Amino acid sequence: MKVVKTKLDGCVIIEPKVFGDQRGFFLETYQRERYADLASITLPFVQDNHSRSSKGVLRGMHFQKSRPQGKLVRVSRGSVYDVAIDLRHESSTFGQYEAVILSGDNKKQFWVPPGFGHGFLVLEDSTDLEYKCTDFYDPKDEVTIRWDDPRLNIDWPSNPVSLVDRDANAPIMDDLGI
Image 1: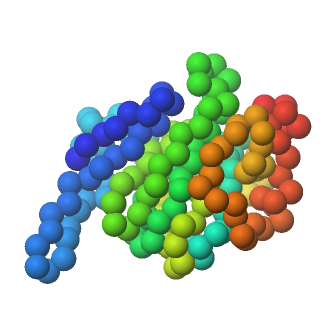
Image 2: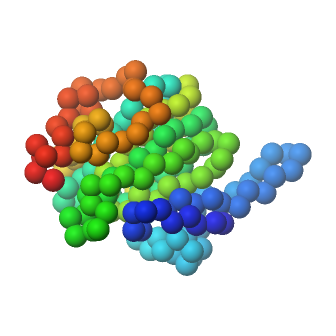
Image 3: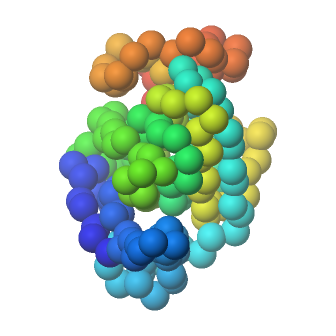
């Protein structure tokens, strides 16, 4: 597997080894020792999530305030523009973002450490996104930042066509006191 560092400390893109032949392909989506050694992912995972969305759906930008989750994100079918925002106040890259296209074809993974906001824009119909989390989801602890916050200036490949009210009406970082 290949680990690609991003400009955000601790946030990495993982390109797993894919073994293919006439039957199809095989890859490991997670192996504790290898991911610890090569990608410095040492936190235990406690929850796996799977979402399916249509093209143009934007989910995010979400984070948990007092119980931050690390997320190992991948797409098994379709594609997304996946975004992580550094929300660690002590970080030199606080308020900056990193983005990567994850797809069933490229099989890349994105490690979004605790202390980051996360969201994605779906680029194809019937896209399946799966992710492992280092803490349990707590809806009372979740905070949403507006997807088009001018302070973040995320360069989305297109505007979303579908947002739930929580995401569409989310406050900007300055209004959250972040």
